[in-house]
Length: 591
Image 1: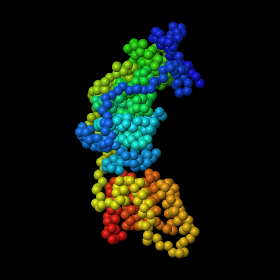
Image 2: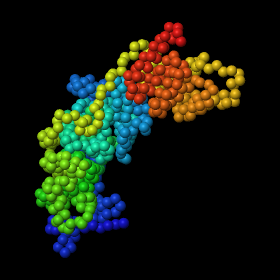
Image 3: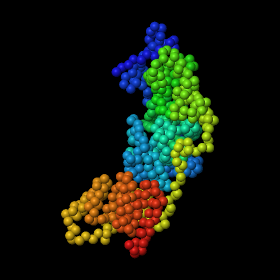
């Protein structure tokens, strides 16, 4: 269904190739089809995106595993962030359980697809990490990818989710960053369950974003790609940070960029160019999100620069904007803010002008904040958003000016972020104790959470530890018994081939019969559950193995691994020590 909408601008447009005069009124016609698609300016599609060059501070020495420059090392130590380093692919596979879909925390991008996983390192005190995985087509040149990662890896700031490493192995392109425990601004602002973000916290978020951007700009990284509410994260203390992933371009050839068009500044629509001023534009959209509590689409946002241009009587600017931007923005704005009894002629424009001048700012504000915010402060923030969204990049404010203005608005500087965010206070977990006994290869593999090494050890050990745990009479060798052993054999073959789901099924058939009890089968099924990211089931099987064979070190080792997966580090360390003690006794002659 096609709908034609006319927007009348009396005596406003002097000359325009798409205008028609009707009864003394200049009319611009737009076509709505499907999802608000415009038939005007179809020849003005965005060009391939290029970005203004920035200083190249990349460290090209990829032979070293860790950056140990004085400034970055000191900053890392002060923030309790490990120095930037190169990770092996096996490390990151282990941390993410083989890049399991259960570990995915976000995924996006059609032209340059990438996925972010949550993981836990086996070293670095079992640190949680976020791993961004690119396709090879996004970064075909491994050197360009490594250079970009090393450059951003030098940055260290408390308002950044800092980059701590990368991996470039074969077709794999991976970035490793600090993991942020308390989700995104989008989650807390648009999809909250218990409480919305209070006004003071929104002001803190806005300031934190500008502080991070100001730091990055001063360090030679003025471009931040796709800044939006999903790029703003909250750490374990509830403090806001921006993701370091936005500092690294998504690229197929190392030259072109993939930018989220939902936050594309108007200059990109004109010439396909992103500059530091474009980041300010995107920040303006985030300010509107903070004010409204809604994810305002660009069709609503981009009308504000047009209105500003009208205020300044920049008619040529209006014509230029309509040439390069879909004029459907007007229609979306009308239907978004004035869905009923649409005013005619100038009354619509005057209502919009009143809003942007702050006279009707309550119409934009988040209704859940009613009575709990300062109108004066909100007006200042709205004014900043308006300036950030100026059509001309040179008219947008500088990032350091935004920091100064937002700093003055902070009204609860001494209140912790977790209080304002409504989340529990983070308690530092005690460091796991050092094992009190020397570790065997099995103990070492379990302490490192190296499931692949544990698998190899269990394969080599086979069933020799089951000797003496079962004594069957001749009468017990029934057909049922033969079927049970056949199920175990199928499970063993699947276990050897790392078909862990089939192993679980076959070992379960063996266990359910109950005629013969094998601690090794429980240990093997426990490991299968760990590979399938089911630590609770793995812990139950390891405990069952201990019941069958109370002094079996392997049962304790498997419990230690499962407990570590469940973040019960102290209990895991206790189990590890108990297992090492049992092995030591056994080596001295006792079983």
